[in-house]
Image 1 (cartoon, rainbow, N blue to C red):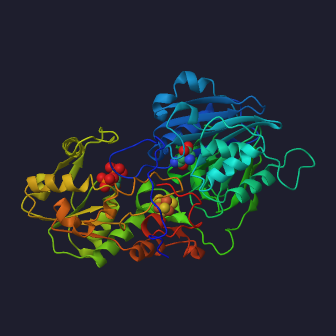
Image 2: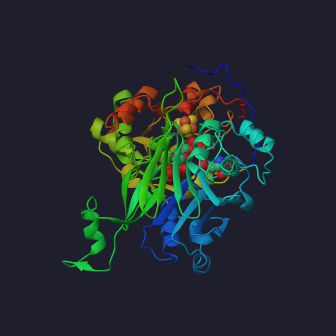
Image 3: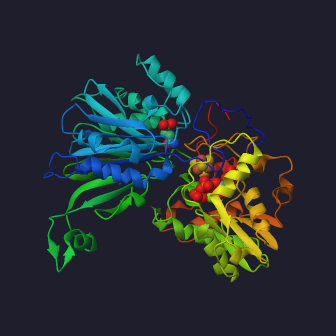
Length: 522
Ligand SMILES: O=P(O)(O)OC[C@H]1O[C@H](OP(=O)(O)OP(=O)(O)O)[C@H](O)[C@@H]1O
Ligand SMILES: NC(=O)CC[C@H](N)C(=O)O
Ligand code: SF4
Ligand SMILES: [Mg+2]
């Protein structure tokens, strides 16, 4: 279904964080809970903090950690900025507990300000509740009205606060013996089927929840048992890691991506789409799995594979890097060209360049050195500044470029602010020909599920002269991977076989997994 003609385009003006290139990410959530013998200390908070640092690529605007010591007074530390700047020895020392949840935010639904920093904490009739959310509710306007109609006041415009308050609603079937949290979560899932991965903390347990479409990722890991002993000269954590399957866990962790499980924690499995997983000191237990609505397919965000996730993360039983290599291979099959060298726009284009080289047998080499100290590219008011910024970020490597016919691979083109200036740099460095190959299809439509996609006019794929894009950016040729090609690459080694129709690609096709949102604003 192509919805091009059904969509009315409006610009969103929500003061969300704005950048000059790429897509902005989508929040990271992390949770940790110790087993029965876990002591009340700051160790959980530190595990959460390290996990959040590993998820920093998913959001850099604000961050927060909330811990529980088993009673209703939670410890809360939140602030604007990066994990390494917000959490100090002093703030961590206030985060004692035996369980905790954390969040790194890229705003999608409300301003990037301290008041919207997550996790959100509310004090309900049945104790404290903390929630960290990755995603965006497609029906937040309707849900907001429903929650307000029930006499609840909201203090922000954040859909994540809305989720927190909706969880305080008594479910329609009522509650006999105190709060029935799984029923409340099920109720939320009926009220709002898309899109979220959530960690929800009560005083003595954590729920990890993925929406019934499985749109945003979430996975479970173990805190490996440690006794500070050495076994045959190796730390017991290493030995336990090897024997991970048989060893009891010291606790459990939940994260947006498995790249957040490091050294003392290990990956166990994905949280299933629609799963409500309860974690207590005794361990994890699946309480329920809510099916995808009738007639709808699973809709895991395909852009997690293309660009968002770290290459070492595992989704649907496969490593992201491997999928990116397949995308590169597929791109070489779809759009071959004679050349001397193939390279990438670092970093997220690296794996696809490797794949293109493997398939085409054209040698791979580095074409650009990246200055890793240059931070985010904020909206630049002029082309000159944009050009300078790209030149500051990337320097051409003369040895590999001068006199050569080069193929430059990138994972995506969004506004086109990166590719044009890079081509100029390569030509200035003596490239004979520059062929651009993009390892994903043209990005044309908005995302309502937690990704900040620029306005319609800003997306280069919607430009009137898009047919002439190669000419416009100064390339000898420029081609994109097809939608079918991307899906083939994602599904090639898919370990979970019933996911063949399981991916959202709405920003590429206009085909929205849950239908079009009731009020379309873009
Ligand atoms: O067309 P544009 O709007 O210029 O955006 C596209 C670029 O932005 C992203 O890279 P980014 O620099 O964000 O980070 P990366 O190092 O992860 O590739 C993406 O990988 C492209 O290179
Ligand atoms: N990027 C996200 O997942 C954002 C979560 C939530 N919608 C917020 O704006 O805070
Ligand atoms: S519309 Fe695009 S970015 Fe949004 S969830 Fe779907 S695939 Fe991901
Ligand atoms: Mg890039």
